[in-house]
Length: 333
Image (tube, rainbow, N blue to C red):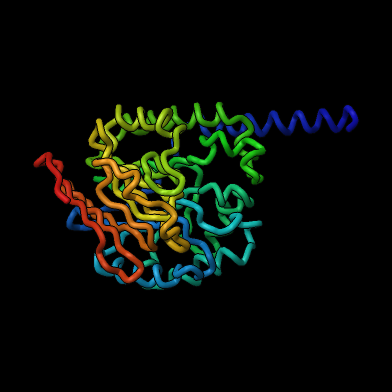
């Protein structure tokens, strides 16, 4: 490489780094979702789903439609790994329609979908999923790295967790990731944590929820994500976060934190599940309230005083329900 090419490469790298800093140096982008006239907010959380309808993805989608109609769905939350096996290869990848638009066709699911990127999404063209071109193809699609959904009594803070995981930057991982917007892991995470913390401190919402792809607490295949436990969880505890929702492990889980009111909810069973991959009886502390290694999804309903979380299997059957009250300061299963 000659000196001219070297200069161009260095300049491009510098611009990329500055872009990263600028993008993570301001407030997180905010989307408004008004509460219903009765003051409630309802949504479905689904993760690890995009397989062109295979591995029961279409069946799960059908049940989501039924539940969405029943609860008066306001929007959908996707916890990442939106398209398998390696994300999208471009804005015009047919996998977008084949795994999203053509699958989630129920009338109740024609609401906004708010999505974060998972590690499999980063293995493709990560920028493609963030492109406004996809919203022109299907107006339901909203995917950013980190952002906020403001639903009045509920604020949901979506966090780009893949760059936290140090293993992904090593050759031992065996995969290639699209790090164009993450030229420096430490800088990216530092500024993202700063913006998330500032946003949480400003929040006046009754309920605060953080959404990321990777689990903080899980007895599934991947288990706890150490980097999130060390770097993000303390900020959540200090700022009154109620729930953390994630995917990554292809199961459904509800785990309570041992020293804070935070509940950890895994909904990563949107298609291929890992049934039998883990024996939950060998690693099942008292904090684990529910674990299911089949396919399914989760619904959430909030009022100013109450929250209801429900997990469903591929047949639409209720597997686990958790209700808590802010006023009464107690919870029940």
